[in-house]
Amino acid sequence: MVKPIPCNTTVQVELTIEQLAYAIAHLDSSEQACLISQIAEITQGPGFREAMQLQYITDDPLLTKEGRRLMERIGNYAWPLPE
Image 1 (cartoon, rainbow, N blue to C red):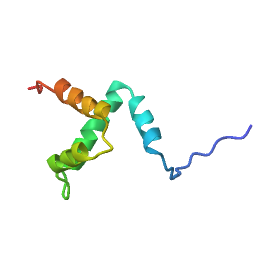
Image 2: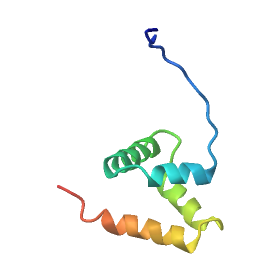
Image 3: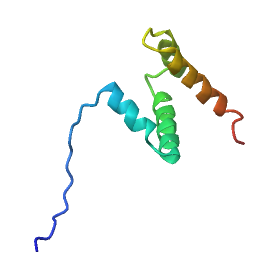
Image 4: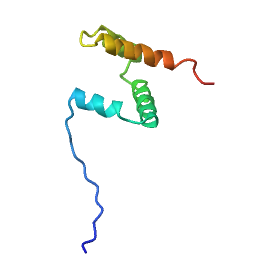
């Protein structure tokens, strides 16, 4: 029997927005929490302005009513902040 040889490989995959959204929507709650926390950490770094990015998103004509409602529900669920 052939024994597998462990190796590290990098693969570049281009996802459509729909595929990315599907993948994110199907993460479990812990994975989604980690994703949101990671986005928050990245947007606090140099060159990012979180409030400006959120404004750009809400001003974009591609943001649907359903997308805007999801943003609102996420905001509502985020309160109150834990101590």
